[in-house]
Each structure stands twice: as C-alpha cells, then as structure tokens.
Length: 126
View 1: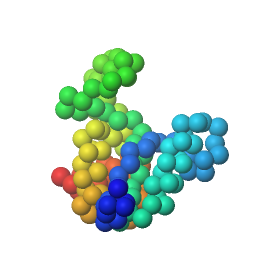
View 2: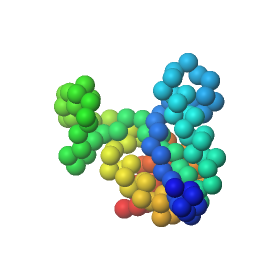
View 3: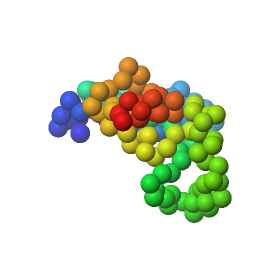
View 4: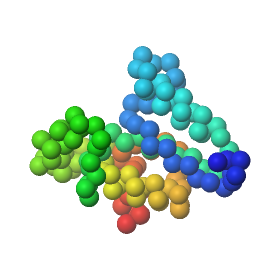
C-alpha cells in the first residue's frame, strides 16, 4: 500500500494490553505489539493504532465467536451502564468506526489510542 501511495493514513485496530516491547509473556500481546511497531515504521502519511478494551456491539453487530455472542446476550441489559463509570475501558462498535473516520480525515496527535481517545474522537466525528 505504501508503494502505491505514501499519502495514506493507516488505522489498525489492535487491543488493550498490546506489548510494544515484544518481550512479554503473553504471545498475542507480543504479536500485536510487533505488528504495531512494524506499521509505525512504514512511511505512511500517518498510522494510528486503536487499542479498544471492551467493545459493546451496537446496531446489529454480532460477533462470530459463539462464547462472545452468549456473553453479550446475557449482559446486554447492563452494558450501557458499564460505559458510564468506565470510559477508559469501554467503547462501542460505532465509536470505533467513527474514530477511524475522524483519524482518516483529521488525524490526531497520538499514534496509539486507548478507549478514552477512541470515544473522544467518535464524539468529535459526530
């Protein structure tokens, strides 16, 4: 993609707990960290790593993972309540999408964004 146009903005949805040191004990965190590091080294116009924690599915979004679907079904009535006291850990599928659009259009001063940043960008995107 960079070879075609270095003017691109790249948004990568990684995850909370990502290990950019690439030395931690948890393999998935190391792999995500290595991926983030590699993307940030590429000569894109801008690259942003979104690290959502818990993502509340909205507007008909359904996980392909059966255990997640079951958990969402059980906890659906209380999910909106969880977002208010824990904005540092919880975001929504809509907020992630809006934040990615805002990043593509306006960028941000932070290359690595946590759920609080994602929610802030989503509000600014409307």
